[in-house]
Image (cartoon, rainbow, N blue to C red):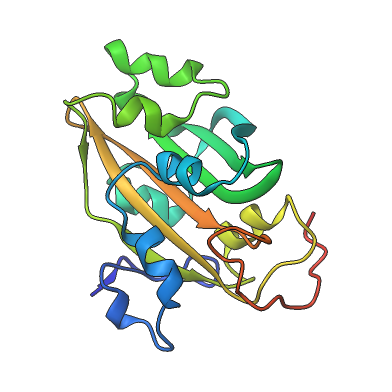
Length: 200
């Protein structure tokens, strides 16, 4: 099933791997559909040291597709957090979190002060947090999320695989999108590289 309208810069998000043609590479399916913490999965798979590198934490506005997913006004202010999950200083995952101001009430204000702590460690440790269904996307260079994920590296594949989920904190939503990056030993290690895109 296709979800939400798309534009030239917004990918189609779907809820079933079978809707992709050509299909999702088999090695990627467990990563994309894992219902648990991606941070925890990276820690298990990384042969060395995993850490979170914060790229950006600031107030801003959601993209059109993010606003639709959150059922919020695109002109409203949201908290934006962008990070990399690094394995031995190599980027494995780019993650973007969008949190409406209405979600950041009461105890949820702690999400403004995560620093280098993984967001997943907070969300999955809270039994009151509810996670929605995982949505998947095939990202291409014209998509804004692809370009954001591409900034840390100058060589990218023609396609990047991504997933996103809504989480409800006290019945109020936040949106987390995770993009898998090419690396020598990461989830996309077998993905053929395209020409350098110079997207730093």
